[in-house]
Image (cartoon, rainbow, N blue to C red; front, top):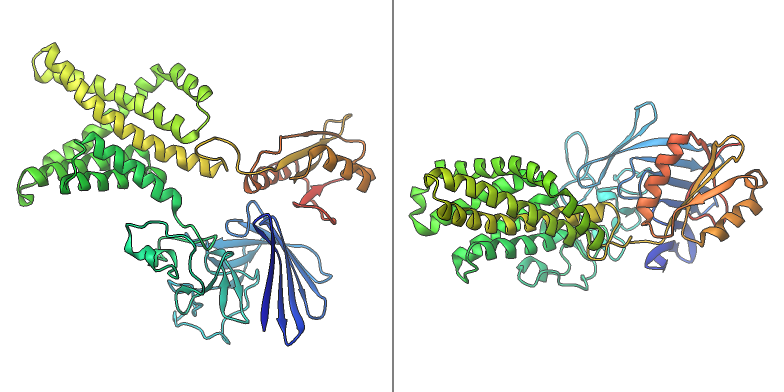
Length: 463
């Protein structure tokens, strides 16, 4: 039994499963949101994912053979693994279970299942949304094949992502040997944005606390790394408060016996950070014109967010420190100024850390390059409306030249020829275009599904 995979533009297009010279399955892929199976008898099964792609779509349209298109809900866990498939009424149709490494297991007694007893995956996908190959009991993780029984890839990762982390030198390992935390959608680079946020946060916190090459300096780097990653997944306000408390612990630990750490000071440090966040809201309103100016002149989402947050946090720290200094020094302006400058500098660097993390997160969620601000794609959304009634009759996406695509539509569908068309530039990522087009489809009630040869994305329209 053999597997053949053909790709184009760094994306899978076709897979053929061959046994003793006989093709038992041909699977076609289109743009991460549609696939079609053709079995040995020629029967087709089509799947069109809605509101996302293979790894995150909440719903899917399925057509088996000559049957009708049916809509199904997809239930996933936090890793993206498909746990159940339900109909539109909420009735559970299929349920699945996995161990930590992706091996199928019984959902009742949690016992691992053999390859023969592994259930048929309705969507052909299971653990973390990866495509399951039942003939081999392997997952196709795009760049490499993954064996859930071994918890290892069958070929090495071409990249060593973190040379200072020993787990990364086993290039057959799956997700740094931490499958309950990470996923590896591409089969190659994993958690790169987390690593970048951790490095940026670590360096900035290290600089703001003396920049010493010592164990204390390393501890400050670790605190900043936690803050940088934390700002991507939790509230930046709480990430900053957590960082302040951890910095206080590090400071006390290296200046005194760790058994004598003053918990009250640690909690006060966190409370002070939260209070400064309240002050920062007012400062942000005052600095809003400057923020707009920075956003207009710096295209990088990460750097513009980093600079804006640094200025806001630094200004907040100065105002808070100066006010606190006036009170504690009994109106000594010079002492208050020094207090404000010291706190402002620390908050400036802390704000830069938070800003970098927030900028990275927003860039990835919006399908943008975090450094240049450009869209990571070349897709456009097309909207066709009736010039008389103004009613939207068509919504679709394409990566072709938009004018050529509109000409195709008019030629292939006389019912769409009279429409007027508006469209976005070809700069959107495929997931972003797909998601926004689906929102428009749902908003305008375009319920009829339409698929034709040469169509890249699902198209819906009504007469």
